[in-house]
Length: 312
Ligand SMILES: Nc1ncnc2c1ncn2[C@@H]1O[C@H](COP(=O)(O)OP(=O)(O)O)[C@@H](O)[C@H]1O
Ligand SMILES: [Mg+2]
Image 1 (cartoon, helix red, strand yellow):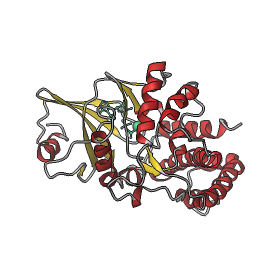
Image 2 (cartoon, protein in one colour):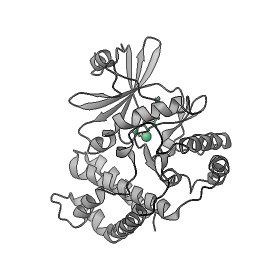
Image 3 (cartoon, helix red, strand yellow):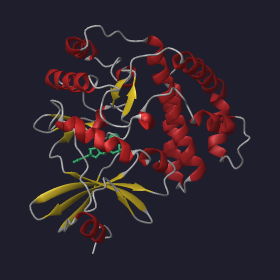
Image 4 (cartoon, helix red, strand yellow):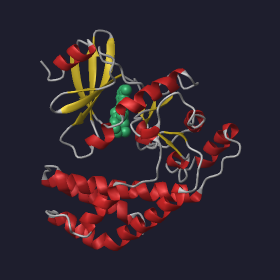
């Protein structure tokens, strides 16, 4: 019996006949579950990963909103909603993992590929519809509302100042070489954070992780991986699109829904820098707190170098 079988039976009343490992994302493991005629996608967050608590903390807040949007907009079939357990929860867990179960999407992840014109149009319609929701949605949104805090920066600064003990040698070397650059980004983000806190920007529902690995082409284009759902300035999503070759086309359609929208440069720069620092922090966290093979460590240092090199 596969180790997930009992959980699927007990929690979801799903009786798997085949469980197959799939390529997951950065944050989670993925499995295709066949049960009779039904096929499911099981997303597994390992509790020993440093990133898991942050990524799973708001599941109970955001999933009901995603489900509600799916029913109350033209986004039906465009966004996957996790299935409920027998007891009506959107996740379940055991000693090792946190689980979310979805209907399986029979399609292709966009990943490294560019978007076609058709896909660009579909994406623009999806994001424009998403951004038409704001504070008025009938849900408590306190936990999901952007406050322009950047909580991980204090921890990153501790590592940069070497006041954190046990910094592995490879990480020490990398940080030493890039300290000045990273500190400059930190200073900029802090300044923008203060400025944006008092700027009273309009907040809309944003996905906040809108890269091509979170887009799938099935019968139509789907946006997946909604863990980052936030009530935030639209730039939280625009930051993924501004440097894409299709951005102009995207905006032509987006502006049909949001006629007066103009990019706020401060918010855009804030999100770009915050994302870069957050990626640096998440890789740093892995090197500090997770048990890794030499190959894993080298790979992570490689990613860290890419993140800092791009700014040359
Ligand atoms: N419901 C689904 N059906 C089939 N494949 C999926 C489904 N959801 C995600 N995937 C695939 O798994 C990958 C990782 O899923 P994702 O939700 O983005 O996880 P992560 O949070 O780890 O990035 C996606 O890039 C996609 O290829
Ligand atoms: Mg993803």
